[in-house]
Image 1 (tube, one colour):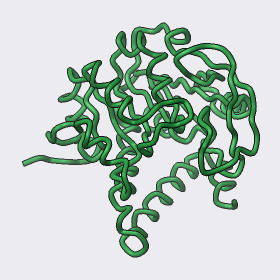
Image 2 (spheres, one colour):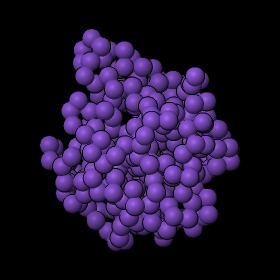
Image 3 (spheres, one colour):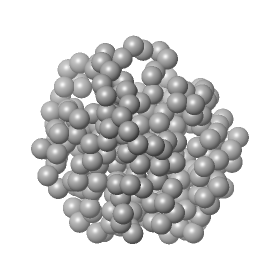
Length: 275
C-alpha cells in the first residue's frame, strides 16, 4: 500500500512524526461521519501517543517491546533525546533495519516470552504490524520464520526502567511473565495493547493480564483516565472494553505507589487543569 510505504520511508524523520500525527488526527475527525462508534477507541489512541511521549522522565529508561518500524520509540526520543531507548523486535530483518536507522537505540533481536529457546514467528507481509508469535484466526501468515525467544529477566539487569510499551499482538502476558524480576525491581509504568476476549493460540486471554497486574499492585486504566481521579478499571470493566464498540486497544498499568505522580504528569502533558 502506498500509504504504508510512505509511512515506512519517513519513519525516523521529523516529517514522518508529523505525518503520523496528522493521519491520527484525520482518522479521529472522520469518525463522527463514518463510524461514530469508534470515537472512544480513536481518541484514546491519540491520548496514548501523547502520554507515551511524555511520561518517561528526563534521562530515564524507555523500553519498546514489539518495536516494528520504530515509530513509537523514535517519537519518545524526539520528545527528549536524554532518554535511553531499548527496543525489542523479533523479526531479524526488522531488528537489523532498526539498528541501522536508529544508532541511538539499543536493539534486542528477540521475541520476549516466559521461556527461552526458538519458536515459530508468523509474518503477515501486507500487514506487518500484526507479526506475532500468535497465529491469527482470521488470516494466513505470508511467511513463518524461526526466532529466538528470551526472557526479559535474562536480558535486562538494570535497576531503572521507567516506561515500557508492549505491543506484541496477543503475546503480552508471556512478556510480563518473563519479566517478573525486572518489573518487581524497577516498577515501570507499562502501556500495553489488549484486543479481543478470546483465548488465543498461546492460551492467553485478557482476564489473565488484568489478574497479573492486580496481583502486583498495578492499577489498569484507559488512556483517557490516567490524568484524572477516576477509579482504575476493575476486572469486568477491563473485559467489557474488549467488546465492540471497543473503548480502546491501549491500556496503562501504573504501580499503585506512582499513581499520583503519573496523574500529575499526565495532566501537564494533556493540559488538563482540574477544578
